[in-house]
Length: 207
Image 1 (cartoon, helix red, strand yellow):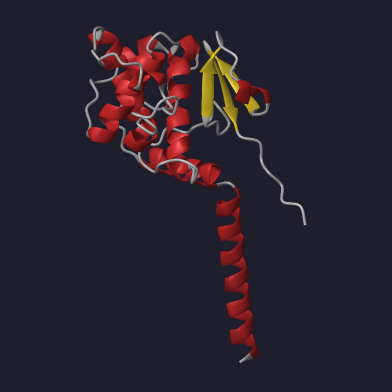
Image 2 (cartoon, rainbow, N blue to C red):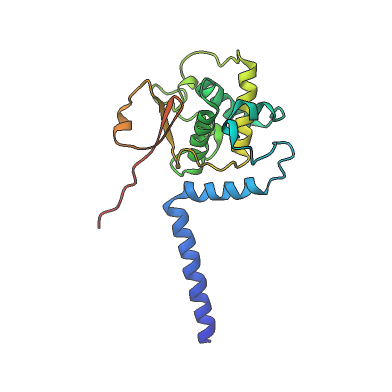
């Protein structure tokens, strides 16, 4: 009986520890799950994952051009559109970084839990939209099909679980041309291309 009780105690402690770890940082936990999922993919339609170290590897236009044209459902279309309007003029690495932020938001309990939900959050409410292109009053017209094709490949790789290692869990970004007030108090995690990346400071409860 004593041995059985000890086993239950050990199982309870391990389960509590795992839950606490996920609760403290849900984004990092889901990022690890994404990395495991990405590593398990056959990659037959994605191209080689371990790109050569030269010419920026995966983060190069040459690498993306070698991949087949990407296709997907509604979530892929939302992410591709966001990357096109938010980051098509960015470096490839910068495009992946913006994609990371969107997926990090999906992983965070502070934001909607779908890609389309994250991108369209606040759309239709004055000064409430999270992505400028969704509420600037202009129609979302794709005028550069080649650029759209390229960011579509980025979107597919990010959604397929490519490790999110560029922005250290960032959930916010802005171009280097502006200085929003919130950037003064948020933690900057990376600067890539034309953007700075941030995450909210962690609040420590006071007893």
